[in-house]
Length: 296
Picture 1 (cartoon, helix red, strand yellow):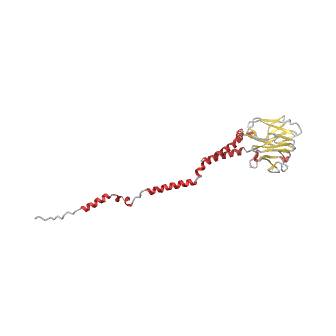
Picture 2: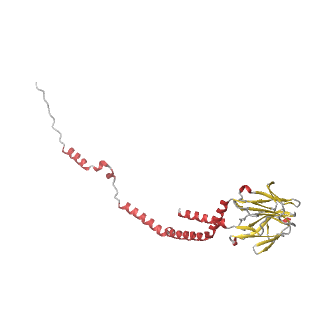
Picture 3: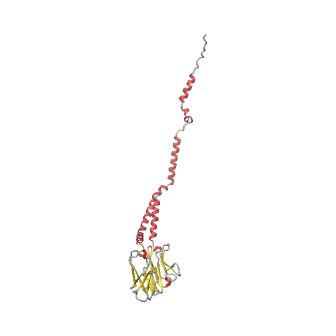
């Protein structure tokens, strides 16, 4: 029972260690949309450098490409630096050699003249989100119309729009349009539940003490096993105890008196009754015959 409990604790600790062994993909820009030849730097912020995290991406032409190969960016320390072209549009993430992956980021590179600057990472519920409709060659404060899921949600004379205290209902595809310049591509804005974020924060903070707790549990397990070991480690002593017990049983059996057949027969036990009956037969004397004469 104790061994099962210890193993369960070790299993829970290993789960916590796996949960905290993660990486976060960060982007140098606050936008998910870019013009041709814009520069961006992506990096994997690791909790455990021994996990071997690498940056990968999926595009319309390549799948699971690693940074530094097949024309995909240049490695600069732990970062991947990219001069962007339309072929670089796709999904980016960090992946470890052990299997887990980080959050994913969708980057869009356009050959047009208008982009929508929106959060590239998920935003927390209750935060304010600012959208900027930007042109490539003219000032960014031109009047713009903003759309969510294809429906106009506002017209702003300065090209800026702020969504206050976002909620899950604000998730969706956003784009903007500047009259005379064109329309931006669409980008998805993700809103994260505050409770979920708090739970993840707690799990990440627990990771700093997981190793210490695991070592303590391992020490306790070793000590417990060492304490139990002598009980089953002495087979000769166990055999000697068994032999001694057997000898005692045999000795008791030898000393126990064995009843004879006569003793086992209840009739044979009453010897007094047999002797008295014999004596009576021996002492018996028949009476003389009596002759009765007839009286006339």
